[in-house]
Image (cartoon, rainbow, N blue to C red):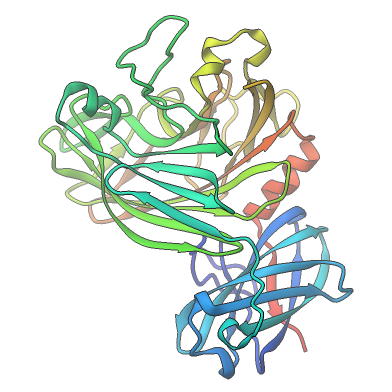
Length: 420
């Protein structure tokens, strides 16, 4: 984690950097938000606050938080996660923000148990099918599905469950790829079924003098162990899972602590998702090796794109003209669009500036699989932290300017401080 000038990074719960800006007093607070670079619509913002005495003993689930800008034009729900000793993380999504402009927000906190009427904003919620998958819902509409089953009862079930991954949904329409019953490549039907939703791995991971393919999962597996923390509210939802990357004997090489967070957004956004993961070398040095086609954090669209005609194939956009993703390194982001179920979808894959350098994007396959790859050694007992953001929206690719402002809100989030 990093420190920013004038503000201290205190955590990454709900997936983005939370900046200390401690408030004072009563059930109302005022916060000043400054965007050095962050701009755009629906920007996630976090502050660490001193909760008013009157609500410190109120459970987070019973706290209703509303924020209003100084002009009363923008109203947003808030969400609180208590940290102890009267402090809490306060989250909200700023509906519209301009770079280099400060705004003041009035925060009001209500104890829902004391109100005769308790109108509540729409909420995220988790729905678990034990041992199989966990759905994230917003107003009872599916947003994502974390596939975490592990079943070695047959070759087919092992193939289907040898690694956890995350599916993205637009209502009932699944936007991303899964095994879909296929155990191998079938020309013009199922292409590369080991590409699954949002997933991570390296095909040439080296440990103790041996090489392991943690991509195609040949004789190795990524196995979900347990959920460590789950949060949900009106602003966002976060789930943290412990995952073991096992060798051919079933022993862990890497322990992954993966936190995936989704934020409340308006149309045309389908999902704004942060992928924050900590990879720990638990038994010895680990070398993450491979190539851009078979390693890193990647997004794979539904197989119907691979099986469809030219009208649904993927198109790519980079942050500047003349970019060659095979040659140019450390791109801030890459965007892609593809056709599915009669409409067009766009995806932006964002690479945080704190991630390892010499990152190369695989961003040219017409079947809509792309992502960021690098090589890195993790020493025994050490942890590599990675942060990515995935935006999925309906429609054709946004402009470069719009994509750049969304990236700025991720790479250099708004700063928050108490105002007098």
